Image 1 (cartoon, rainbow, N blue to C red):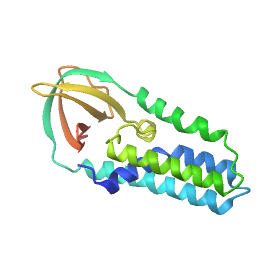
Image 2: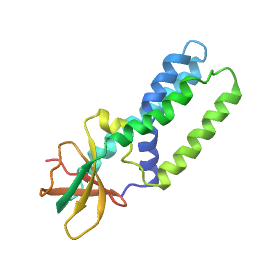
Image 3: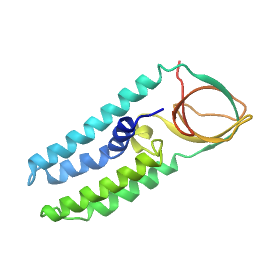
Length: 170
């Protein structure tokens, strides 16, 4: 299961596109702040990739899927919720920096405590898809997989967090 540090890195990685946008918009006027924001985003991105590679080394369990629904649209909603409001904010002083910091802190706490690690646009960008699956003799779970999942398949999965699985690749 993902530790708090891992969930924090996954949260930060979900904001990598925004850190890149901030870097491009503000590098001329606020070089060090822009570089710092970009560095944090890059650390989160590398943390996510390392976590996914490490998680793939965990011994899987086999389960049978009896129901499946694709949920990649959640990542689009996530992007809209953070990009649009901040593109309109002029970064002219410390007040905007504090406001952004408070927003990221609150969002990060909610993301980490709610086990929302599967709602991450970077996962989609590197080829993963999010599914809601129903397992035979079990409940409904979120699944992160690289391929299209079909009802009736037997999957090899590992647990990332409570009710969140990753399909083990060969």
